[in-house]
Length: 343
Image 1: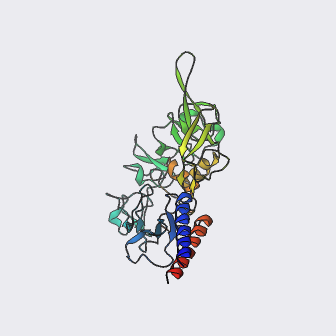
Image 2: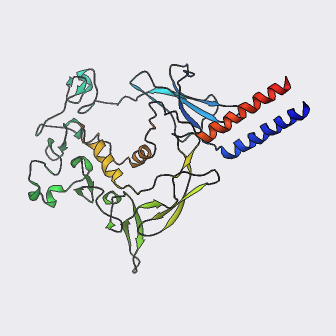
């Protein structure tokens, strides 16, 4: 009996260390399907398994539509730490076109219609850009709402550079940005093209270069993953990347995937340059005032591309790692064996 007990104990210890070897520090992102998070204003609760040492983040939806889950993606939460449903910060001052409202007094125009602030129309007087309607901005020289550039009522062949001059992106059509004083279409140049602004590059990235005379310039260049897969193995700490045009290499640390149990992944590279154009169009073609459009938030766009199921206002998909499940199952069986021998 003592021999069997000793063997069982050794098996348990061996599995314990094997588990620690294969497991990593990434937390598990799971939906709170068992309703373990009982607090009404809590959207995430961290729970540490004393046996496996796994940290699990349990998510549940915020009930109030005016709140969001204030979860910090860069923070390592400890056992029983929580993230709260937080009320969206109300905008200070009067609201511009198409912003949510309840009373006329909340709006710059003084009119709240169907819970949205109305806006000034073409050639109507204005005091600021936010008061003008969709695809309009406030021309400061005469305080009038005018069309963004280029004016879509003018044939393309008649558009010249003078018609595209700008001081800010507010003046530009929604598929353009004010680059070098001109409303230009972003993400159009290939790697190796000389530019003054990275927004013109398909990859939304450029590198500083030096000419033979010592002068500096910038070229479009994307970095590409050199590893055969995005998955990091248990012994891997870094991923290798190389720039496509300049051939410069560098390393980035493996990151927790946040959507797959305890897996680490290489950070995304720039192999899909169309992500910028597609995401750009998807967030700018909307019934919004030119001031309110959400542009140049490429970190968020790449984050959503790399973690497509990760939406912190909703539960994270419950995806379990097979290796982790297997080791967990053996650990539990060994504990059962040990308890039988003790009895």
